[in-house]
Length: 92
Image (cartoon, rainbow, N blue to C red):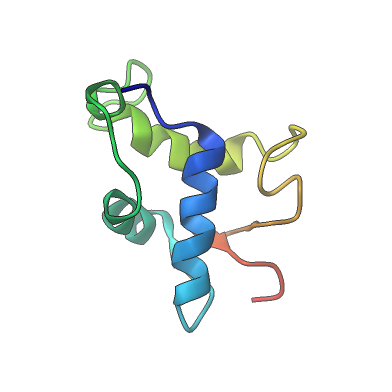
């Protein structure tokens, strides 16, 4: 099984936020909920080489914000909005 992509992680985040009344969540809340929405491979579960105490897939959650200026990114495309400490649906 291959690793999940940043876009797959972002789409799962969108699903989580659409199901929440507030339409927003902290990164910590998203990290806790995402394994219920994604099938994570052994590669996804490996320790990140650049972020201690974090699995590769968890880094991808934070990369949504880090890569917000890149075409194809959920924030760049207007599907998500970066908020202090988390992510939200546009207009929430």
